Structure formats: structure tokens, C-alpha cells
Image (cartoon, rainbow, N blue to C red; front, side, top):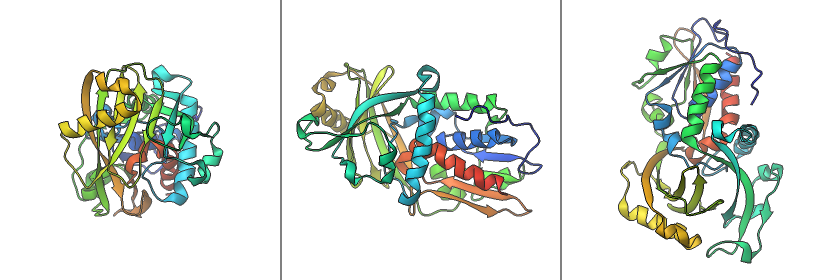
Length: 335
């Protein structure tokens, strides 16, 4: 993952005040790493521990899902895929594994040009598709254990010379950060509704159920981008993650028992042994969707500083994280 890039040397590089990245999820961490790799002095401010961010709730399978703009997503996704393929060489440390599975209700010809860059995609015959689905696509993709991965990202950032700080930014605006750095990078996800006064942001609620794995070693998804119910399961170390929901505009962070029961039932239609699996816990997260898609753009700050916005990744922040981080870093370093 470009590990031979220069370590931050404390000399700034984006100006005497260096850079403050606000937001400690996967988008903020990857952006901070790319900046410190370029030799900048970088501080990352996060309200929460990295394992308590929205990113920690993610499944998290690499696949472009519920994200715009379509013209950019393919390139961002492929750039991120190459990084995950490298990180999969050390799964215990990085949390990244390459795992086989099936995307039901998916046709290869219906995907974007990015799919032609993937090796191993195979259209399945109808009798090969699990459950009540007639079409499906087999693939071997990065599956990421997010608590482990987020902890690795933070450690990597600090190893390169970055500074991680638990700080809460109130808004609107980023005056507090701008007072301490010439460049501020806004990776606040749904928080940018207030901090960046962006009314185009909205939550898409995702609920998951964690169960003991009854022997499932491959992933499965059936996710209609227009539906608020999805069906998927991801085998992670020590658990099987069952999903899910995509409830546009919902903000309730409490797990709903009826929704959880429906998730288990849907997954059990694909793998019946899931029905009897012992429940380990429930998770709810709010995906930061945005009208117009991901926002990566710069605007001037008073006094000659720069604010780079980098948010709105919807349900695919993990999938595009590294590609988007490269773009945000270009805006910072062009300042």
C-alpha cells in the first residue's frame, strides 16, 4: 500500500499550520494516511474511538453499492481494491481477507466498466444460485473485519508520524480546526449536515444481526438498490454478520426486534442453518448518503487557509476509501 512513501517529517508541507483531518472513520483515516505519506504534518481529530465510528458497523464487503457519481465510482473502487488485495496478505493484522461468495440478482453485463477490470467474476447458471433467485454472479472479493481494520489504520497512521486526537468539533463551520491548521479536511460523514451546512446529506439506516457462525464460509448478497430491505451474510472471525436494511431518512440507532427477526429469517432462506444460530448482538449504523453523491472539493478559508470537503459516501465508504483519499490528498497538496 505504498508503504515506502516518505514519513511525515514535521515540516508541514501544506503550510506552517499543517493539516487537521476531522473524522476518525475509514474515510478520515485513509485520507490522513495518504497525506502523511506525502510528507505532511497531519493531526486527525475524532469525536469517537475508531472502533465506535459508523465505519465499525459496516459488513464490510468491497463492492460499489448505493454511491454516486457513477462516472467516478469505478476508478475510486478499483484503486481501493488494489490496496485491499495487498492488505489481504496479512489478514490477522489488517482485517482484510479475500473470500468467495455470490451476488444474487446481479448480471455481469449490467455492471459498469469497472467490472471488466475484475478477475474471477462468473455468471452463474440458474441452478447454481442459492435461494429463490434465478440469476447471480460469483466473485472472490475483499471482506473486511472493520474493528480490526480500523485499529490497523490508526496504528499505521501513527507509525507514519501522524497524531490522533479525541476532539469534538461543533458547527457550523470548522473555525476551531482552522485556528490550528492552514488546511482542514472535512471527513465528518453525516456530521457534515451541520458542520458544512449541507442539507443534501441524509441518513440511510442499516441494521445488522451478529450470530455464531454455524459453518458458513462464503458470503451472499441480494441487495436491490431501490429497496429498504436487503439480504446478506458475511462470515467474519468469531461471528456471522447478517443483514440488513437500507431505510432512507431513518435515524433511530436502537435495534428493532421485529427487523432483526426478519433479517434472520431472510438469511435462513438462503442457509437454513442460520435460523438456529445463537444471537451474539445487534448493530445499527447510519450511512451518510448525499444528493449528488460524494463531495470532494475545496473552498478557501478566511486568512488564506483551505477547507477540503470529503464526505457523502453512502453505503460504499469502505469500497472507495483509498481512491477517494488519493483525490482529496491531491486537492490538499495542490494548495
